[in-house]
Image 1: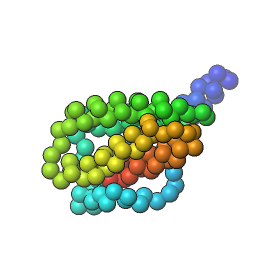
Image 2: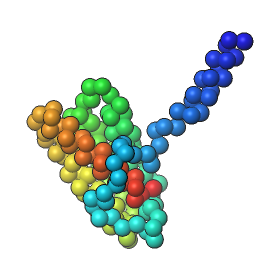
Image 3: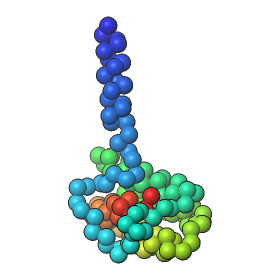
Image 4: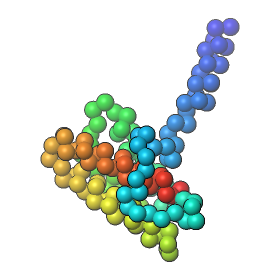
Length: 144
């Protein structure tokens, strides 16, 4: 009987909390500022090609994993993000307005990752990491 209750509670907990790593969730409750002046596609998010979205989801996952660590290795994160960015840019298949809007986000994001890689102090790394999370929030608000 006790085993059945534990199993039921476990399944319930997994159902509620198991999907908390979705890409469209934000890293904070701060409102999206649209710091890159990205336009929506007739009030809808832009569709990112599936082959590219794989790499963006990997970037998002790396950021989320690092965000959940007590003592994050932010220099290590910059190396991981750079690898994903290389894969993303080498697999670019988008064209037109969606491509242009994606670049409004991507180019500054690449600069932030480079800043993180070049940072000298833990304090500077923490500040840049906050900017990277904010940038990922921007992506999630305008693209899917």
